[in-house]
Length: 327
Image 1 (tube, helix red, strand yellow):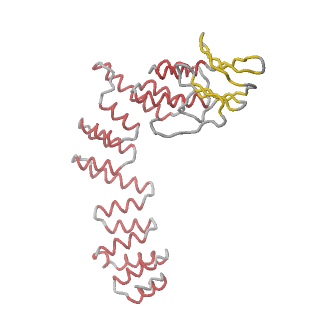
Image 2 (cartoon, helix red, strand yellow):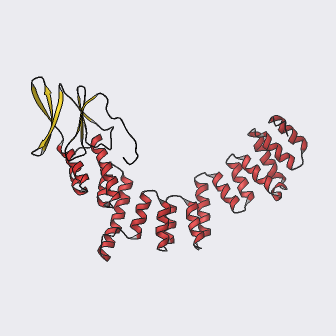
Image 3 (cartoon, helix red, strand yellow):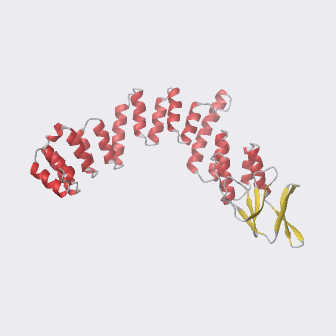
């Protein structure tokens, strides 16, 4: 309903019915009884072979049965009441009860889908202890650990100041981080003047540009140290192109060109040197760039550079090799 999309989940359907008081769907496909215990995961269907026609559903006495006529007799197929009760608990908003039901079940494709559904609903309802349990069951260790730390913060705030602790800025920021809404998390931190916490968040994520932007906007004394750390991280992770762009943005053209050449990007080096007259005067630098351009068969760009330094013979030679006859 939320996405306004339709999905066909069964062909040749001779019977279909919701289990009363739940979101469980029962249908018949020829000689198969199909049950969706979690309709939000239509690909997760439980099937059983039957030899007749489904004629109805009966629910009572703590069990739900599908009635099937097989010749002159009627056979009852019992559904999994635990899975049905899970759907009922979800509808009632009783996520603690839903968790208790799931913990009694083995991990199957159906129960995995239910854990995922419960994790989403628990997060939306800010029932973080339940969400943590869900991610643990699903094997999402990093998310479970992150939520565990968030719960510890909320619990400590609750003990010290009362309430649930969900409105504490660190909890709200961490929930925004969990949803990958880092700009919202940054805003929450900065509203509390927690500049270093916002910077720490971005550093842990290796989002150095955002970290430096926050430090610059707030006039943080560690700005230059951050820039040096960022540059070193780029070099350590062999991101010479990005390091070159950083040096170029800071006005160090020679360092930027050296990094572009090291990254195998002579065209970027040529673009920079063509835009800076003082760099064009460096004969050795220009020779290194043109050699790299020719080696990479970027003849037209090499021709542009030769033309700029008034070497028409070499420029013409490169233009011909690059089929740039208009030049």
